[in-house]
Image (tube, rainbow, N blue to C red):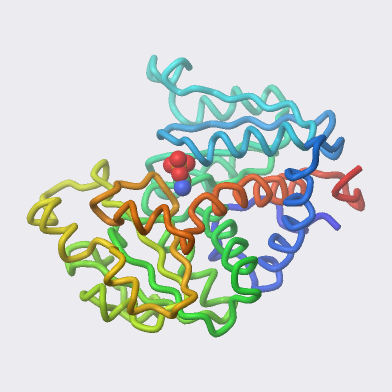
Length: 312
Ligand code: CP
């Protein structure tokens, strides 16, 4: 069954039922990626344009892999090699892409609201691949998918999200999704890296990593987003690593079977030590594998013909 949703712009717009549909559909595609022949004809004849105005390794690559495994035609528009570098506006860029009749536009942009703006100016389905500090919905879906596979459920889990929360669209999308599916969410950051209005998020707030990790089922670390810092918000990287970096000693305070997550890119030795990132408790590369399955699920649900089955 395809989705009644036209776009995927944020987790905020999704009901618990929508989220579960994305997760369950992605399970079907997870198996496809582990087969010898990792391709299905589902989106043959459909066109997916990846429009990335910000750097990306995991999201851009996995949308490309996902589209190709679904047999869609995938076009990656490199902004530095496009007419954006000659001053073309976002609206003109979208109007020109629209004239080529794409089925899906996947967009990453430094401005919060960019994906919503594009959705107002195209007939294509728009997928938000990260807009400013606002939302990164497919990251939250793949994180939930990874947690559900590791723990068997999301309800009643304690999930600690620690790091530069103020600038993190990942933290925001995860907090909304995890709470919507019944998890208990904790945020941990220095006060300078906590978002304004954090008390409205419905999360527990900590400024001590050890206490935030106490009894957690999931510990998700985030990097400092230097590209979004407009002023010095931490005393030094070394001081930050000493007080807010996850190491084996602090992880001891989580549940014995707690898993460790990171959306990437990691700054090893800053927010996370290598011996934790590479330990058996780390599911960081499982998150990357889940990313392909979840993005296949999203493309299928938004772009397949009504009534079309996922694998044919
Ligand atoms: N997690 C994530 O968004 O990674 P990229 O910036 O590499 O896409």
